[in-house]
Image (tube, rainbow, N blue to C red):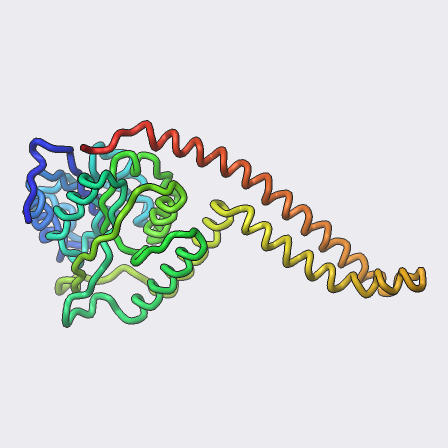
Length: 313
């Protein structure tokens, strides 16, 4: 399926790259073939190989982000590139560019702001390693439970987004956690979105993965914890308050009962600890209530900023 953008909305593909000389030419060529007229921006992230010259020779617009990390690249690209529709795709040639016209068609015809490419491994492919697949599935369930919306592939690097979604996205993450931040941003703003299955294949020969399974996994977990604290403050601090209050009551109840019966306070250190835990629990609850009120105000402001930008027809 091939769709031209000559008379329609402007479409920009953002391709973060670090040492992808073996794959980048195919990525650029496939994007241009599947969507004639698309502007392909290859953002070089301090590559030490021939990525830049190969991408430029393939017809891409090459730009540079010296700060290492995919999150830094996406943050820079979202600020610099101006388009009606944005495509984000990795430069390793593992995603099927032929799925792009269908993703864009769905975004425009259903007036969506975000279409997620859910990776579907091709037969015989080892691109989606078992450890990565099970970890991704665990993160999907965790984020779905915490933020109230199901997601099938929150770590996918293949997405189609509207201008208003991109320009309202704060992009705080520095590295591979950017996909998690994008997913949670969708859930927090409750933007209209959809998922589309896309092919996922092995990297071409000579291309090497930059993922560090455990390192990146722990970074994603830390980001999820931070986002829960940031986006669900009442639940976060309320749970903390409840746990501290329960411990305080368990420690203090026997002492209170003894005081009622005898007028004495045994185990003074325990009494001080129990009362301190109750005080901290109440303070935690108050912090949660205040931050929840600020969150509501912040979301209203984010919604107004989001609505300032039109959606591509």
